[in-house]
Length: 155
Image 1: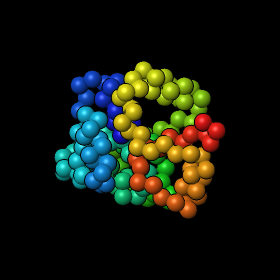
Image 2: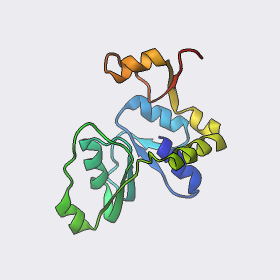
Image 3: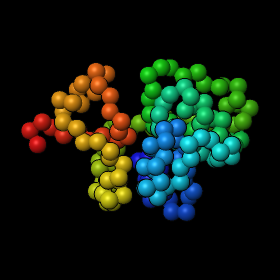
Image 4: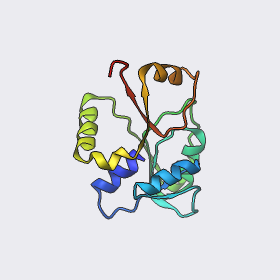
């Protein structure tokens, strides 16, 4: 959702559609004024941003591309992926990785958030204490949220 909002904000006139499998997230996306569908509409696009990094999401990303299209991977899943090399060559597809762990990327991200905080506020569905975040990240608890903000325990 953050990627879709940023693309729509930065490139006015570019059609952005989010394909989402979790019904609650579809509703959230629609509240943010971005088109959302629960499953692939079957149409093909020039570029797909994969923000999940899982086998199914990457497979779906390539399946939705036009010839010469590009998948931009901005997330890492838990397992290694098998890339469709034959199809990459036959269809002229490109795969671009973009995580941005450098300080300049963090600065740009924070600046984008500061430019339009109301645009992104709706994406945050949970604010959790640091102690809860540790249990969540360790897999000892689950939360239904989409994007979560972790606050220090002393705040």
